[in-house]
Length: 444
Image (cartoon, rainbow, N blue to C red; front, side):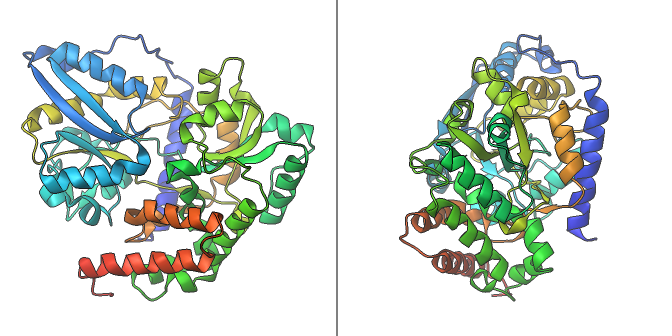
């Protein structure tokens, strides 16, 4: 079956189910009691170490971990590493055989072997009960050689899009752009008004990369079958005109000053504060950002923000990514059963709902039975742009996601005029070739 059609159908079904369920949302508060069958078991004096990248562990999960400890005696020791350092730290720990209990990683059906060597480093979770309730598209991305190695609890509707300040757009008489040319005009008018058009946190090393591979559906629209040609080594990134086009346009935004003077020092963690300040008009985020701003910045209102797709290459489509930050149990752990117990606890229905209700960034979860919480602005966005969807390239194409941070370094060099667009694409090809040969891929 055409996977692009499957992703599209799954998103539409998921959104429709979420909208129906949203009417009965219970809006649980963080202080709500979290009950679990885990409480009936004898308490243990065990600590589980959990290594994760910055922003992967949400506050409600930490609340749930406290309740889990109360009920079981099992303590979760979160070890959070800055995102630009995480992959190197994790690789070093896995290579040394260090006895981690749980580690975080990006799922992706092409990446679990090359990135994490899950067959040697992670525990097979195929027979866990929660696997049957998790969205099959997410399970597919957590599977390597027919075995499930990761638990993914994430928002299936959390596409990376442009979030914009409606007040700024209204004050300047701007319309939501329908093309790249429209987007340039909006940016120029915003800059002329003394406002930085786009908040881009380059310093984290990963965020600015989103502008490029997230447009998979548009690339396929412009050049049908491009993903398949890249997968089979029938095409190079360097030679794909639509890929060069999007990177060229992104670089144009930078060189015209639309990212402002502080892009290389901006941080992802400061997005809410900076967007609420009115000094920036837009940023790449997901539909949960307005609620996060309202919660974290006094006097802010989620209703002041709207959404549209990343408009490079005249894109007007919604991108979908069933791969996301996920949880793996280390095969070197001395507490594998306790880690499985924690995963089972997190995926209990009421605990999933607690996580969703109390995490502003999430509007839905990739498990059956949860009640979504889309607001009117979010519903309108999906009504406008959810008709044609497709997979992002970091999920659709092999040997791309593992080099994410390296692409980020190259793109930073491009933005700083130290590399050309062609240089960035050539380096992607070189790294893909190296990974493919290591994997003994017959297409190479």
